[in-house]
Length: 308
Image (cartoon, rainbow, N blue to C red):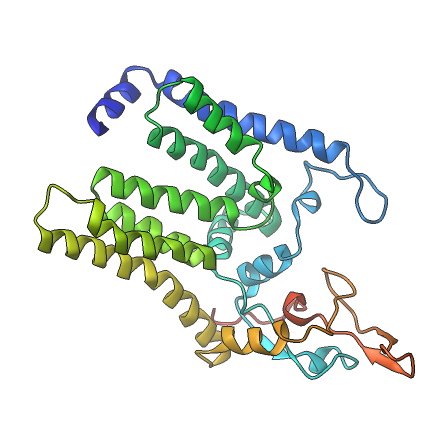
């Protein structure tokens, strides 16, 4: 199967690459049309071809990790009216942000670098998916690409967000298993796990691959490949924890922020970007109650970068 696909790619590159490129263009076109017909929360239009139009709730956290690394601090240290809970960006994984940081070495801004990484990953996602589908245009394969282009929630495939990057990594992991290459599978699994917690699904798949993949190898080798690839994939999460530890001095920084902020249902964010201390009436109406940004708070830029 792999040999036939490779031969087809060499024989007719345009025929093989056109469908994923068309799906990528169609996805951008459809999302642009939807954005053009949409209105932002402040009543203004949505500028799809701007970096501002690509931001979502967590985008500033990923950008802050790319710029200055991880940090965790008591909210009241920067926002005096906020409750005594933890703030920071250690609830977000570093894979996408580190790719943005690396690409920004070209001289582009972090925002533009993030959009380029996202769109390149989306194009790669369609290309790998097309490869996995066999590289032949049929009703089934064409419909699969079409669904990918208009997938519900697909706006995140174009946002400053790790969904496109993580999905590409997961597909590369699947490709590695299909090709019988534990190295490709491990690399894809590592990248997926480093991008987002959902990417940890790659670890489970690689563990299960012992039962259905590597069939040309004897059982001991099958177990070594599957378990070894799963272990390497799991190191994506360990890398994230290591970066958080470097910046905060705490191995459990992720859990601390989750426990401190996720569990505070009363905390509400006045703005998803650069929140400022605000007060509101308490539930009983008897006095002021401070609101806090909780886990979605965006840290202020720092003058000195962390070691993360």
